Length: 197
Image 1 (cartoon, helix red, strand yellow):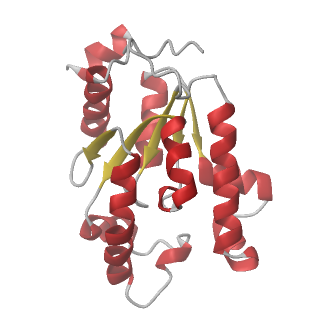
Image 2: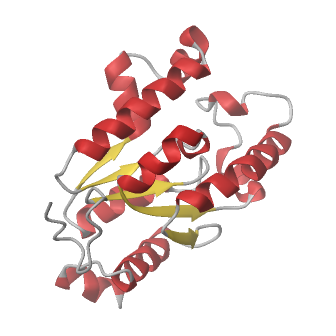
């Protein structure tokens, strides 16, 4: 397999850039922004599942349950792993927590964990009614508990960790690009110029 995106490729990995992290950490925003900078297609796995099922994630949770949804996430990871055309993917926040998904995620490509504090998540998402796991009486406590459980799983999967918190989107993107370059990725010249600006 030709992993032209890396100078020192790892033969067992697919050639993708994978974003993981808690909901609200910026996976979709950063992934979409970097798709232009790295000239790669971007896909959000939650959107891929919604297209497959012809219903929203909230509707899947309500009608078929979380276990069914998690099965779909694993199937999407297998599809990503077998796709050899380099892309950028944003994974659902719970995907890395499933033990069977962790080795699969690592084989999908270079994994970037966008880390964020519970308080920052709460500020970004308060009032968002489309997140089924936050539809409760005390969302901040739920966020804290979920991050406490999910954080170690994210770290186990990650090749690169970037703190997103109060940082501007462009600065997070530049930080990701610098860390990719340090990891051996070839960054396009125009993107490298922007990254260093």
